[in-house]
View (cartoon, helix red, strand yellow):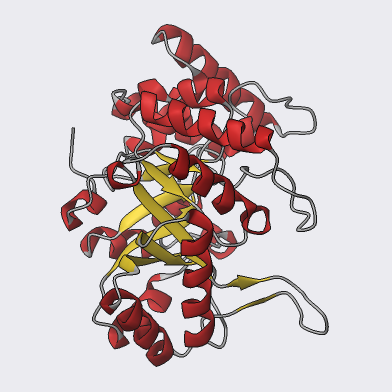
Length: 324
C-alpha cells in the first residue's frame, strides 16, 4: 500500500479516519450524556479498530463538547488504548452567545483555552493533531504561531493542521510558524467533485462556477500535507439513502456504484471511499457514521483500488456531462 502523506510525518495512521461528530446525542448543551451514548461510542470505536481504523477525528463544537466527553469515557474504560490510536481535534468555531454572533476565532487566547477544554473532555494529556476549523477573517498569523509554539512546547499538541483552507491561507499561517502544517481537511467526495473540477476546467468558462480553491490540491501534494475528506460518503446518497428530489446524475451514479459493488462483491460504501482513495494524492476519508454496520461496510476500501476506467466512469457520471 502506498504511503500517505500523514505517515511521512511519522504518524502511523490508517487511511480511513472515524469522525466522531455524532457521538453524544443531540446538540442541546443542556441535555446530559447518557449510558446509552457511551455504549454507542464504545461500539463505534471497537468496530473501527476491528476493521483497521486507528485514527479518530473530533472538534470542540461537536454536539457542543459531548462527543469528546463520550470519547473520553471510552478511553477511560480501555486502559492503554490512548497510546494505540491517533487523536485529532479542531477549534476555531464559536457559536452565538449573549450579544456575540456565530463567529470564527483564531486568537491565541481562544486557541489555548480551546485546547485545554478539548484535553479535559477527552481525558488525555495531548492531541496528536490540532486543526484550525474554519478560516477566521481576522486571523493574525503571529498569534497563531505563538499559540502553536506554546502548545508544542508544553506537550499538549504534537502536530498542527487546518480545515477548509486554501493554499494562500495556509501559506500565510506557515510563513509565521515554525510548526509545519501537515493536514488540510476539505469537503471532497463523489458528490462534491470541485477538487477535480478546478484542474479539469483550467482555461474553461466553467471554472467561474467552481468554488474549490485553485492550486490547493497541488500545494498540499507538493508540501506533503495530508488531504482529509469530510463528508466522503456523501451522506449515504450512493449507498442506500432515498434519492427523492435528487438530480439525474446522482441517481445514475448511485446505480453505477451499486453495480460496481455487486461486480466486486463488496459494498457501495467501499466503492465510494475507494474512488477517493484511488486518487494519487493519498486522500484520507473521514467517515462520519458511528453505526457499526456502516463502519464495517467501509472495510474493503482499505484494499480496493479502482482502474483508471472505473474511476473516470464514476467521475463523469457524477459531473453529469462529458469532459471538455
